[in-house]
Length: 163
Image 1 (cartoon, rainbow, N blue to C red):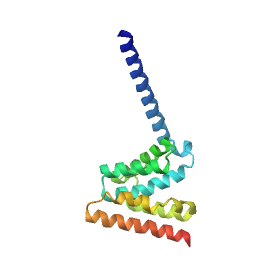
Image 2: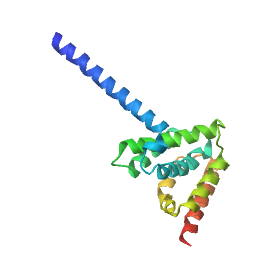
Image 3: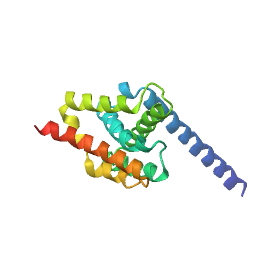
Image 4: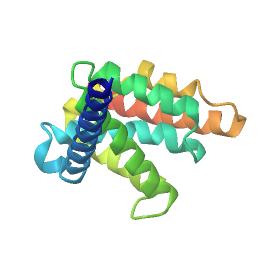
């Protein structure tokens, strides 16, 4: 009995340390994403596109959080860390927009437009079906219309790459 309690405490301590290590690793990766993440520009571009859709209505609702998680894991299914980094990047961009901390919605649109035109392979990252999953979360008519305009903008960018 005493041995069983001790082993439970050891296991709990071990799991806690593993979670702390993973959390620490994730925070380091977030901070040094540009240096430590392979093809970070591709991840950042995807994060910006997803942020455009999520930030259209202000706060991130539970539906959008769930859809974002599903999208991230469908993109990087074999790499859980990369999927989590994508989610973190989207949340980071969204927070910057909401708090007016060095980024606003129009500036993000300009960045996406500029990067798409400069790096043609980014056109392949615009997955309209994937983005439509986020559109399903909208219930306010104004937000629906705004997101439709964002989708049209992204589709136009994608079409320009084909020309």
